[in-house]
Image (cartoon, rainbow, N blue to C red; front, side, top):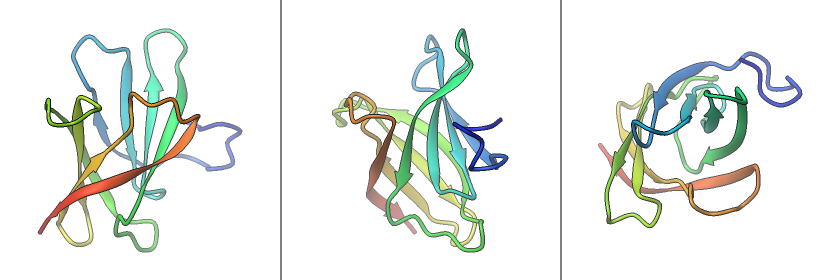
Amino acid sequence: LKYGDGSMGDLDIQGLAMTNAGSTYMYLGIESQSKILEYEWHTSHRIFRSWDLVDFESAGGMGLQSLTFVPTEASPHQGYFYVGNRISGHVYIYEVPLLNNEGTEASAEPTKIWT
């Protein structure tokens, strides 16, 4: 899978999540970039948006190892992404602004880190 003009190279996908069973979007966790990509798999087969994971621990292209979405009414974006870290074993909880129109690239802020 290539992103954009291919300048990011091959993507090291280490996690995959969906926000609900009826969605046509998958969220891909990219280890080497500490990033979540929004991929529309049903018709366009393209990446629409990406979020950099602020303060996510990584070294030498290693870091992100797992990704899941936990729906909750406590979030203004219908849930949180839980991101597992390969280096520390910590789980980072991110508020990803899914419902905001911030353009194709934005940042996601951690709300909590489980150690």
